[in-house]
Amino acid sequence: MSARPTVIVDPHYRRMSEIFSPDDLARLHRTVEVVWGRDEPMPLGAAVAALRDAVAIVCTDWRYGEVLEQAPLLRAIISVSGAFPRGLNYDKCFARGVRVLSVAPAFGRQVAEMALGMALAACRDIVAGDAAMRAGTERYLHEGNIGTFMLYGKRVGIIGYGGIARCLRPLLDAFGCEIAAYDPWLADGYLRSLGVRPLPLAELLATSKVTFVLAPPTHENKALLSRDLLEKMPLGAVLVLISRAHVVDFDALTELVLAGRIKAAIDVFPMEPMPLDHPIRRAPGAVLSAHRAGAVQEGLWEIGQMVVDDLEAVARQLPPQRLQVAQPETVARFASMAAGKPPQK
Image (tube, rainbow, N blue to C red; front, side, top):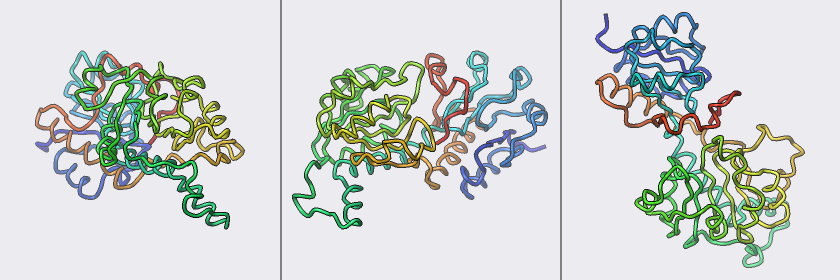
């Protein structure tokens, strides 16, 4: 019998090669005794049987039923979906000390990089300038920069100061931006300790030249950015929507961008794929991306790296450090806990 602890690796819909680099896959097998480790979903009966000896399971949603009592050694449940697993009895996990972990931090750097790129594209009308050049309608020098602005020295607002925001912050530091943040899950004193200025949402929108929407979808923030709030943004300001469209009144956003009131850089949409006739597709003040911010291969391999890092800790009976830990006070408030398909990044 192997001296390594047993871990079920059942990542479907993810593929093993998508989330584990060759080096991290080899490290995974050196660290733990892998059960299953295939792209196809593990047969349910086999998974339940294997849970009796497992110290951890790597999965997407929890599809195994009320079987925690049959898993006496279990110490960690790791979801590779980007959200916390649905269908799981979290009260039992908290009572037993089973940590429920999400790989959301693995998306931080790649999404932050894309957010900055899209913000710059919107500030400087890079996409519109490219289209004009290709169409032979370009305007040169000052005339071609009417309505554009530099990011340097501007007030930047961040809605949701979690992992993506903390990856974005050092990128913005190079531009000397004053950073304001709105996050109802973080105390003002804590935000100030991170070097950002906490502001009420309306004031943040009204005083920021660029606002990044980085908040995860919750039951409380559906269409949080209403028409009234969006209309408080300064004329020509940029809204970067990079987390979930759930947080914004998308119809109002579309109308304001079409009217030339504000600009937008958008990577996520209420429906994906977006209908071909949706008016946002023809908005000249929008930079659009097909939910691509969090799907770069080397970024996806950070999932496997972080999973193996935390499995190394679990194998040594130490607390995991890399992944996001579900908290009793907040986990049920995520919109991904509702029925339907889990969010995929």
